[in-house]
Length: 200
Length: 161
Image (cartoon, rainbow over all chains, first blue to last red; front, side):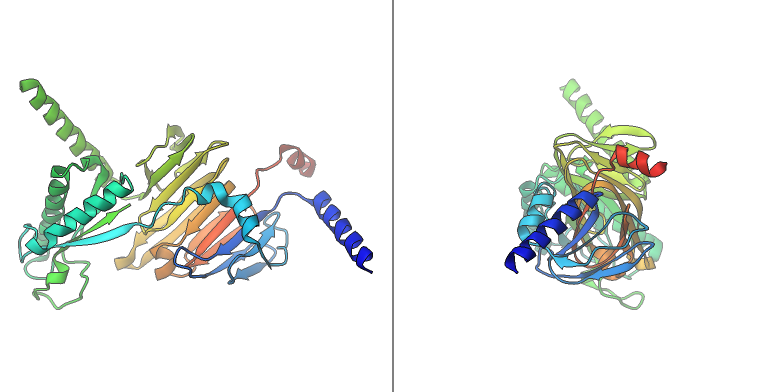
């Protein structure tokens, strides 16, 4: 009985080996925080949902049915993906720098944040830092648009002064259009007078 | 003294024009954070060498050599990496959360991809998609690994008959 099972397994393995046109395979794995989400893979033949850690499914082409889903061993995942996994970027890190009303002068409280930004940029040798300028809703929208640019420019100037290459810095500015804390017009809100810095 | 000033002015001017160039393109998708071996981007028919910091735009195709790899971070904080002999196209990328416009399609032609969801997959579940020759994966906030085997020339010829 045991032998029969083994023979059958070998035959199946051989048959699978012969029939192998290489398949495209999908593996759902826990993200860096350990969270397992959900993926639905769809082609002309069917649709399959993966929602368990290490669950995998494969198909040969758009018009071919998917394999049964199964749970893959970590070794199998490493064997296929170790090169790609070794070069996954660290998650981007965000910082906020705050300003006084109507001003592009950085709040004294925010000055230490520059040290953190520089440390993060150095740690990952960042070549891509976003500076996104914002204002609160005090004053006119078009004036605020300019002010948000001035704030981002000021942060850029300060980072460049600290030795960050200007070509690594990308400025975007939104005026009062993207408040962190939504308010009525002409409301002063310190949390909205900010430049969001993202180090990648 | 004069010379160093000139160099400084030129450097500042170059940096300014680089920034202007970057700002003038609103189809910026992301940037390259790490490169191992030979990696190229095909953009408007031209083949460019990819290095750390290379900016990526919609419709770019990224190709890694046989022993190469590349790490990429997109504007919505999606992080990606490709293993050796891989090819990925940034088919579509829309990230305007304030206007409710969110969507991303990455197309893997071959090789290995590691995909870790960013804000698009979190804010609009299912609107982040990964196309492959065997089907489309719609992702709802997670990490996904995809392997697409290299097409075999001989097999293709057989099937064509």
